[in-house]
Length: 114
Image (cartoon, rainbow, N blue to C red; front, side):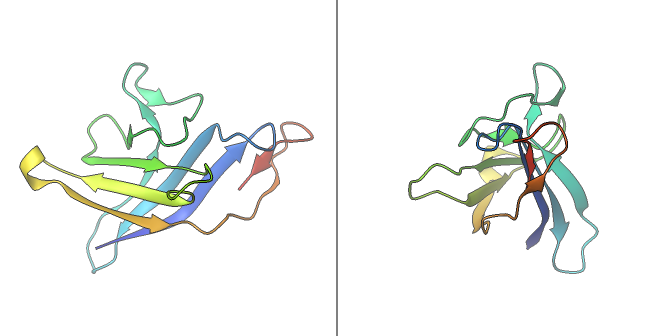
């Protein structure tokens, strides 16, 4: 069982998300606790432009993949999470992320950090 904490998104133009991150922590007295970003295997770093609904890995060697959408459809506000050491042991689930509170991000008049 996992806990999603510190969900973060950035909208430099005030509407389109360019980055997302969150923490995954064990909720059953486990030791797992790390930050998950939208990882780009081609550049070996966080993506520069987040794509709504795209599946991302949490990192180069991470067993976790995820997807998040703010598009107005059945998946709006849902964070999907997959964990798998192999295709035979894939575990998946999702949680609804409440609409985050946004405030000025400091990189311009429309920049929002949520």
